[in-house]
Each structure stands twice: as structure tokens, then as C-alpha cells.
Length: 135
View 1: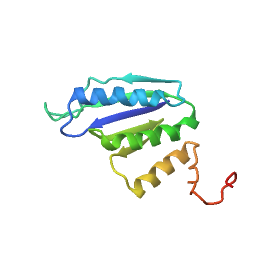
View 2: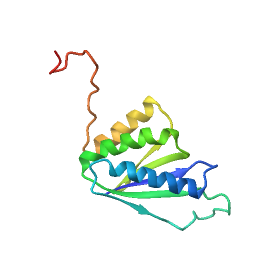
View 3: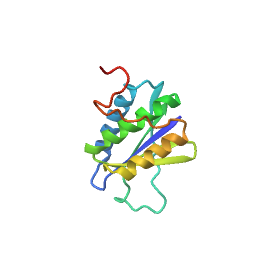
View 4: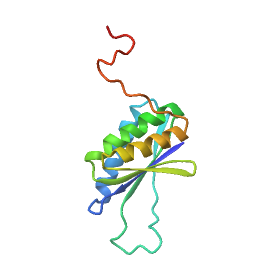
């Protein structure tokens, strides 16, 4: 099982984050996953003062490991134009934080995370590179 947790930016509200969580759920269901269910946690972090709590939305994704790469890549592009600061992907005890940035370092972190979970990166196809089947 893969757990995806969304953390809103400082100016996000719960309604906005709920809508984003439902939208992401719909997008993940378009992939070849078995199920995507909503998870809720009503508990505020220990020591948080009223008004400091940042809304969190969580999804539990049931899928075969082959879908992991597609799900993480979807998340990576989806987060770019959303009021979500961070999306955390958790498998077992290991987590990957995907942020709304487009950086080579983040790509390497994502590729390493996917490789550790049995999904090696696919080589990029360059148009006109003479790949099999071109002619």
C-alpha cells in the first residue's frame, strides 16, 4: 500500500485542500490502481496553537509496484499548480517528499526512491535517436 499525504501551503484552507485531495484521488484512479481511499486524521500536531495547524489530506493507494512510477510522476506534475506545499509518498517506513518545484535534484531523489522499491527508471527516448521501429 502506498500512502499519499498532502500538506497545504500556509494560506491554504481545509476546503481547498479537501478539493485538491479529491481531485488527486480521481487522477490516481485513472491509473491502473486497485483502489484509492480517503484517510482522515482529526488530531492536530502536539504543541500546535489554534490557527497554526496546516490542513492535511491523505489517500491510501492500493496498487501493484509497477504502478508506483506512474503514480509518483503524476503527483510530481499535478502538484505544480495546486495550493499544496508538499506531497509525501510513504511505502512502509520510507517516505518521499515531492514539492512544487521542478529541479534535477528532486528528479534524482524520486528516481532513487522508485529504484529502492523495485521500479527502475526508464531511459528517456530522444526523437530521431534511431530507436528500434523508427524508419
